[in-house]
Image (cartoon, rainbow, N blue to C red):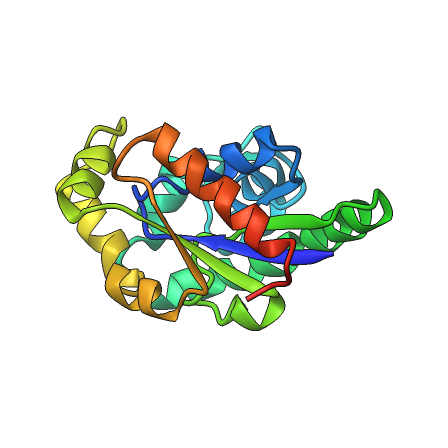
Length: 196
């Protein structure tokens, strides 16, 4: 089974591209979705213990947690030490299930793949990208997003140009879903000939 690492900076169309893989029958592990599930119960006590006032009724309040860690690298590292091992365990279970089902390709949707050194954990890396103005417009259209928050998130991410340079494959999402879908089809055809 070929394991694809799918990544890209905020607002580049990673979630949409992951969905394009799903529509083609490729199993996709969504790290953000896994974190949402973990915050809804299993990790809430540990997060509350580390960041008092960020969990109520057995679930993490993501807005409160964001306020507690945004702009504080030490706090962010403490949070990652809680979250990352649980996400990795869920990821391993996903890959085992995909392999036992005979999937030829499985996708790990990893938002900070390069930033967390995860490229060694996959067979090939796919970066989604779009022009900077498209990215900014997409992100600032999200509920609760501000220019300050967007800039803080970007500061934690490798520049798009560096991600593209390091990727095995790049999918341009700036030309719409149909063009991105065609790129996914071409990529899957290429992967049938071997990763990389």
